[in-house]
Amino acid sequence: MSEIINQQLIDDVIAIAKDAGKGIMTVYARDFSIYEKDDKSPLTEADLLAHNIIVDGLATLPTQFPILSEENADISWEERKSWTTYWLVDPLDGTKEFIKQNGEFTVNIALVHQGVPIMGVVYAPAIETLYWGAQGFGAFKKLDASEAVSIQAKSAEAGETVKVVGSRSHPSPDMASYLEQFESHEMIAMGSSLKLCLVAEGVAHVYPRLGPTSEWDTGAAHGVVLQSGARVVTIDGAALQYNQKDSVLNPYFIVEPV
Image 1 (tube, rainbow, N blue to C red):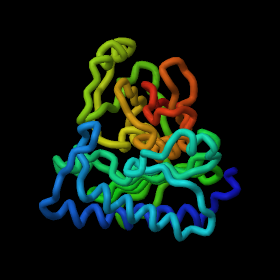
Image 2: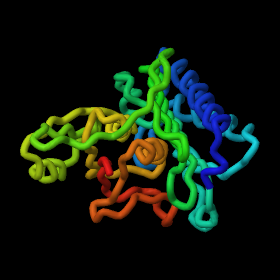
Image 3: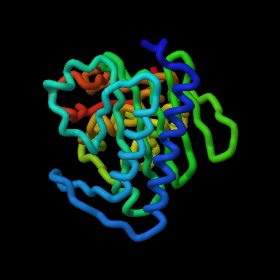
Image 4: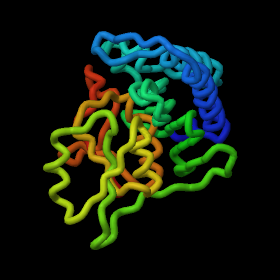
């Protein structure tokens, strides 16, 4: 399926993510309204604006696939289970970071085929940082106006302090017992899907997610991780997959170099 991915498609999706980021930043720069979703999580004007920009942008692409976004998540399993290839979108991941205005929020767009994210674009507009990965192309990071650089995950060397990335907004009570396996570790706090990207670029060695996430929270960054020489696996070691069940909740998972 990776034959559908070409440089033009990657460039187009990056442009769509950046357009959504620009829309988000217009809201970020002023007072904005905050709503409450059914699950009590916050929803801002920026989420909805970014969702519309992304959906409209994807509709202009020459090849069309269904779209599952956090903001249109009510698509039934009966309909979704027939999808072989689809776009998985989180228009604004890290809404709590957005509300706190700490800059650690992202636009996430993934192309998923047979349960695997074969392309992912992650854009953090407030810090002008872009990550992307695609089958056949590798994984990359681009800061502001600088050139894109290839990125690669790194394992901790023997005796090295293990750098563990964790959530800024969702500390997990299970983390302490997980960390006992390491002789020495250093925690790196980060919001949104940027946590997975830190492993992809080798800044962190591992990201244990021992708390709830949804598929759109991870899909795009997972696409970057897979092309960086890392993997995302469940606690029992199985590869994390997408759109394989009625629920869009992920099991607990670990992001680590292969």
